[in-house]
Figure 1 (cartoon, rainbow, N blue to C red):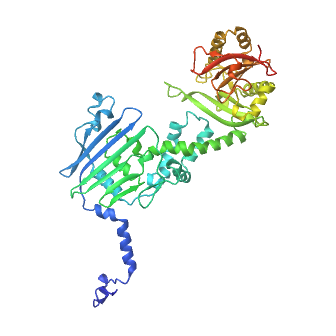
Figure 2: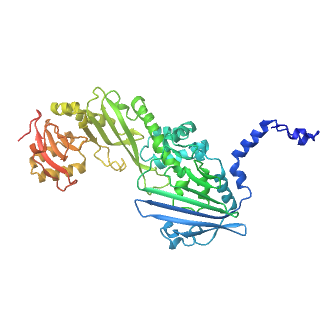
Length: 520
């Protein structure tokens, strides 16, 4: 077979001279054609009709909607064919809203062309920031609003905010976080199959499908039932055969053809990436840095605990000020909680200090808090049989409680900051009812007189114990099947709590001597 073809022509003009022996041009032509196969196929095609179906099934009322976009005299018009009333709670008041009207609405030709271009693009086999349509500018623009929406109420300290925003808008961190959002190893094989198949959440079944019909009779189909951001990946079916893609342009182009607020619309935007990105990547990383700050930095609001206790976890939450004047603070009060353990004893029970009041991002009464923690911890240590049980039985999960006696949701200017207690007022009300029902009024009187010195201790499998100042211990109540340390339910008389908070909750009121013997 001869390889010399056009070169045999006698001295062709330089502008038209080409020789088939230069295979570089052949391969460039083939490669370029392979990359642009769909774009070339789409040239000259005119979309005649588009139908978009959107549906949701799960725990709740099933919903669906459908829209048809048709070309008339070179102009595209959208009409709603079903499900319009499900889209608007008050249909009558918004009947004149063109977005929800059954009357034809004009659709830009550019929106149709954008969808055709997205479908025609080469398949994207793995999720990435680029495929999601996210860049550094997008992250910077959404950092502050994301903190205010998703984190400010639960973590209001300036240092936590600083860590959140710095982490959120770090492009490198976001790129590495994409596998966490979609699942590590998730990709599409050359054959178009999932590697590995995606997990699904129960009671959430979205579905969006698009049919495009061209004037030459071709039909393209696009659909997805995925729960991932932008419902990626999407399944595409055209004249070239089926394929799957992580191209975020596809759902965003579909969304431009739909009215605002349509069913599943919140899943088709880059904002759908936000919640998963924050929950699975940003917050875990920020929590690690936050705990380092609380444990090690002298400027930590919990620095008064350093040396004596190991800080396990902590948070500072904000209570918003509703109906406030423009010049008033956004939040009416700040409160926090910290979980800690004695620094010199890794087997010691955890201490849960909840409802701590904060002023200017610092604990308002650190001396009182530290003093009360020491007091309750020391009283626990002075009950040998209980201390040994907590140290030897790791599954017991004993926790000492230290609480703020004033409601944390009221401003400090309305309620003075008071020393913490272990039994809150609501718990004291329940205790009074239970002990009266058990006919243990004498025990109740002693607890009421020394309430600030009484320690509430709970266990992982839900038992409630009271350590009295004289080192006696009261088994207040337990859930059936719980670990009662030295005893069994048959050894301790009990009855249903009144009123019953839980069908398996049993009230006891048994008193245990400091030496570990039941008091008759």
